[in-house]
Amino acid sequence: MMNRSTRAAAVAVLLATASCGYILHPERRGSQGGQIDGGSLVMDILWLIPGIIPGVVALAVDFSSGAIYVR
Image (cartoon, rainbow, N blue to C red; front, top):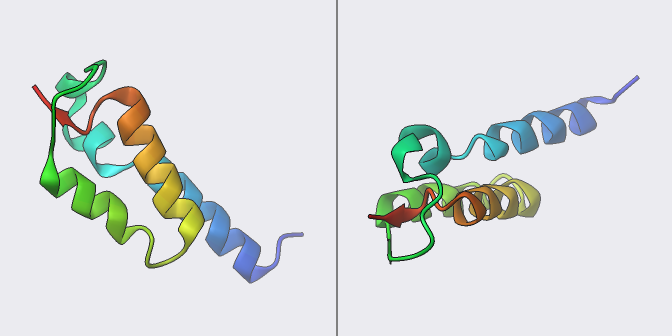
């Protein structure tokens, strides 16, 4: 069985995977570059408060999908 901290970390990673830019701006997915949306970047960086892993995952998802870039 998972202990409480392992379960909390798993939930945080799952929530960070569905990071802000990816969910809030699906029309931006697939962008190759451009200006970075400050709101999405700040929301992703806030995931660093609960832990380094959720923050890094959130940033990686938004940058790799292109959802953090303003078209």
